[in-house]
Length: 110
Length: 116
Image (cartoon, rainbow over all chains, first blue to last red; front, top):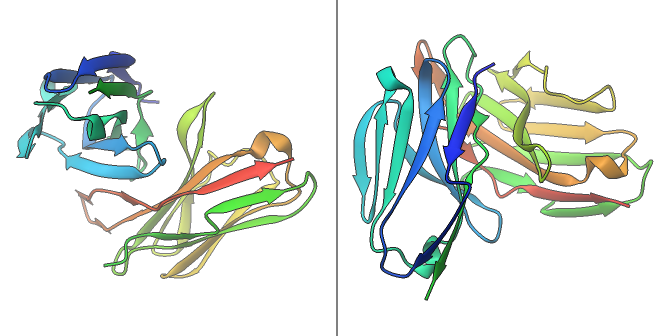
């Protein structure tokens, strides 16, 4: 099946810093989503981005489908950004099933 | 919209007992998914339904696990008998799937299951 690799696995930032999270996938995809899992365990949708660039406030994401990677940018980080960020993809010919990466655990210190 | 609703939010049971997890998808969505999250294996798909029909259950661990979707607004995941290694957070998600349209999936709050 498709492989989804996220980097870095762990990241510690000072409040106000910027960061880039990366997601590499091993095959063509029909769908790519970024999620934030907050400290209470909820999975919050950030972006639905099979290709192109999107922005939502301090967050933006870019997917280059032909090169099989996606990037999540966090600017001016806040302590509430802490948690785990997951990339998940629906592979071609894989129905509608999401395959998750291992996540990037982010801690933002005040 | 209320989002995906799951119940119970927490379940503590003893080994050998039957456990039933419930899910109500977002109204209008026709695909429903059950995922499990553990420290060892991360987030993994157990089974998904399209228009109430099970499409892929290859992620279901073993015969102790079963899932049903009797109608478009309700699904259950049952574990019988439960074992300590089934302890995990179980998420339900839903989306709208059209012909060649892969829309985003939305997740419920999860059920944290502890089997003693």
